[in-house]
Every structure is written in C-alpha cells, then in structure tokens.
Image: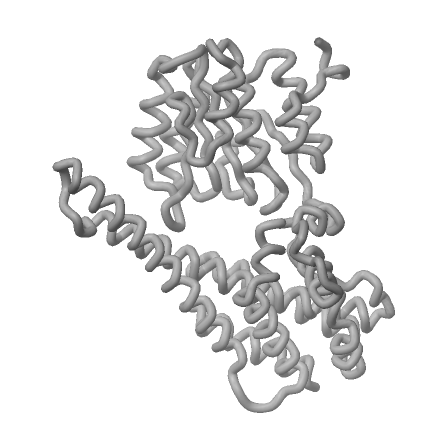
Length: 383
C-alpha cells in the first residue's frame, strides 16, 4: 500500500481523529513497515498518549497469534501484555536505573509472544542526561523486534542525538470545540455550559486540564489566579501571590499522600506473599517526595499560566479584540480592568509572567521569583 493511500486502522483512527497529520504518518508507517523509534511531539493534552497506545497495539498485533487479543490487552492501562513496557516518571525525572533495566536491557530480550516488543517512555523530556546517553546505543543499534516510542511535550529538552534518531510524529493543540466535545456531559446546564466553554479555551487544547478546571479545585485555582492578576492592576498592599504557594503546597501534599497509600498497599501485598515488609523503604519514601514535588510544581505552573491568560485577554480587550478572549465567561471583568490598562502594558505583564514560569523550571526560589514578579506588575499596571 502506498503512503498516499494508507489508511489508519479503526482504533488508531479514533485515537487521532483530531490529528490528521499524525494519523497519516502512523498509517503510512504501518503500511510500509514500522521503524524502530518514534517521537510523539506536541503540546500537552493533544492526544499523544492515547495515540501511542493505539499505535503500540497495532505494532504488537503484527505477527501475533491472536491479533485482536493482542490489541485488546495493549489498550488496557496498565496493560497485561508481556511485550509492552510503559514508562512514566515517578517524580520530576525518570530514574536512570529503571531506564537501564526496563528499557535498555529489556530491549535485547526476545518477545514473549508474537514478533515484537514495544517500549513507550512518557514525558521523555524528563530523562536525565545520563539516561539519554545510555539510551543512544539502543536507538542506534536496536534489536530487529524492538520499537521505541518517546512522548514529549517539550522536545527541545531532549538531546539532538536523541531527536535525530527518532522519526517525528507531530501533534497540534486541539481546537476548543474538540475539547468541549470531549468534555461530554460536563456542560449540560446553561450555568456550566459557560464554564465548560471557558475551560476549553483556557486549557490550550488539553482535555485533562479542561476537566480539572471544571472541578472544585480547578475553579478555586482559577479564581485565585484572577484575584492575583486583578490585585496587581488595582495596586495596594498585600501579597496575592502567596495564595499560589498555598495551593501548590496543598496539591503536593495530597499527591504525596496518595502515592504513599499506593506504595503501602503494594508493600502490604508483598508482605502477604512472604517477601518484603509492610512499611515504606527509603527508596519508596524518596519516591513519595518526588511525586509531591512534581505535583507542587505543576500546580504552581498552572496558577501562573491562568494568570498569564488573564493578561493575554486584557491585552486583547484593551485593543478592541474582545471576541478572542480565553476567559470567555469573564468579559465584563476584563473590560473593567482594561479601562485603566493599555494593550502594551498588558502584553508586558504577560511576558513577565511567562518569563517567571520559565525561571521557576530552573529551580530558582519560588518565593523570591513571585515577589519580584508582582512588584514589577504592580509598578506598571497600577500606575
């Protein structure tokens, strides 16, 4: 079958229905004979993970004794298929030892069934330099039956040597209508329909983020971002950014507690089987800390992204382009703020927030970075 006429299998087609470019690339790969390494790259929430699982299912079905059963087991999360290895970072980064054992060493082992093995690395940008260097040999000289799929929202954080050895599969942000459609029945009533519409715009094409914004916690986070942004415009005393730190702390503590309970349950089950004890090991305790830190960082980044969206909308309204705002349910409040802020100052504010988000990824002091940001915002916007 030629590349031009290749059609995606049904499950893969469903998984990429909003990503025609990715669908065409993957369908052509299956038709011509799949390569050994792929990089699924694109913004968060664009469907990369769903597409990767569907593609892995098709790879494992090729040459399998029962292709339909191979697909079915691969699509389960977590999957019981013995020839699928799916890696997620336990914390801020992938562990070097796990990459070496579960991917690099395992990629040399023959398939347990069928003709192929598939290794999926979620958030590949979280691979340390040591992990990326170790992975190079596997990418350069793969076993003929091994296929690697790397998923990255920030591929620029990967080494050029990694990027050059993977066939790119490009994903774009989902349009707001597609996100709204994916939200389903969460916007049945008139009151929540406006919320869902705003969430679909604010999510940047990320369905999971849109769902979060419609929860009680997401609504509270959005409200705190709006209050902080508007406080910078109004001026006056106070440190509204401290609310961001409190929200991030709460998110981290909750995620850490959930991970601790999961690991304790695993330890208890292991104890029943006569092996390790029922309390967390030192390594498990470190993993809890990593999960907690990761959730805290993500919550703080989300708060700042929502604050950036407010300034982005403020610039649009001040310039007379109110029909393109992301906070579509808060147009009146944006007009009120825009009465005293020019488009240029609003754009400066947006850039400063985005710059602070970038700097926080470099492990600078959260408190000092946020304090400096709000002093800068107030000195310009409240004037």
